[in-house]
Length: 285
Image (cartoon, rainbow, N blue to C red; front, side, top):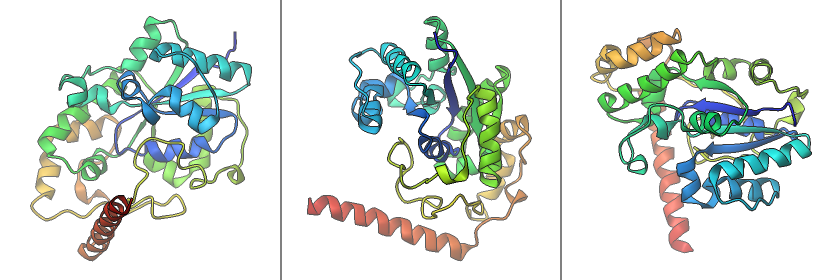
């Protein structure tokens, strides 16, 4: 039996998981499954483990059951000296959705399944400043913050080692080495192995136009602009404060540089343009 355990990355939506996923997908000794989860598996298509490994890696597996698919691709990885990394679809376990009948488990389904089926794995959390997660999701803060807090508390209460998106942006290679050490991945690589945009399709997530995706490099962006009346809502939300305090983030919107109104207008205009362009392309088909 291989001593290479499955590597599970817990990450909430809009927390930088897609970027990390892209990064890992460039490394030839790693097979990355993107947003793996039984609910996604039932949706089929590129959301399923079976179709991801076939389309992205040319690997054919026959199993239909989610756990059986995980075991089958893990066996293939063992036989071919590859590491299996699964980026968890953590969002659906902690957020109300019609996909979970508006009753999230509030625990990681993958972790529960792995333990139940005696699957050995290592795990990490990948997190981002909760204020920026909220601004990126653009939901009602009273809906967002308690659900986000439940995820952050789960990581903390279960002593899951976390890595921060902001640290990854500051020094991706250094953080990746630390992530590999925590996940027990014995892999040497250099920056020349990484081409974020060559293999960006090997990922489920935010791959369309966004502030980050318009750059051909890893870049720290300013905090999103908000109108004056929204800042007090952010700074006074107790759930968001608690979430940020747990991993030593600031509780204040003004804690880092943010966009000007003009910068926000330019981005919003580009966003609308790209949205209309996608609609036009669909109509032309």
